[in-house]
Amino acid sequence: MDGNGRWAKKRFLPRVAGHKRGVETVREVVKACVARGISHLTLFAFSSENWRRPAEEVSFLMQLFLRALEEEVSRLHEKGIRFRVIGDLTPFEPRLVDLIRRSEALTAGNALLTLTIAANYGGRWDVLQAVERMLAAQPERRAGFTEHDLAQHLALNFGPEPDLFIRTGGEQRISNFLLWQLAYSEFYFTDLLWPDFDAAAL
Image (cartoon, rainbow, N blue to C red; front, side):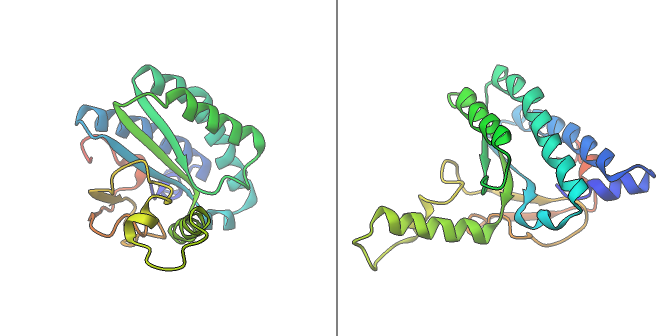
């Protein structure tokens, strides 16, 4: 979901205004996915590289995430949407982690759409943690592992591999997102900034 900051800058607004508008776009895209019968949507909300941004912006993003969870998860649950978060949550404050876990538990039985948010996620981290988990699960085994063995331990092991990867904002790279899972996906790049990516664009 690239382009929130540039969207705000074009309108002479602070970057945080772009992030707020980006949350509204998430609502629109989720609704559009449900209308089209899409079963899984994964959104790259905060990469492991995003910690390099100015501290004030990172703090705002964390607060925005917290508020979005508080305001949106009950609506998602009412609509039958399952909510998941993938990524390394250890740097997040306990209140946010607790809210994420409670939101996942609340919506665990829903099946209309699985909405996954990648937060403090990186594709390389995902592969490394999967290897560690795979080895820990079978410590006596030293060789002969298969792709299936590893895939069971990836962060997105509860869903299918993506059919389509969409990146907004004009960049044409995957930026360390789902490196393993995108092996056979179609790629679509658009110059539209994320806050302008509406149902029609989808």
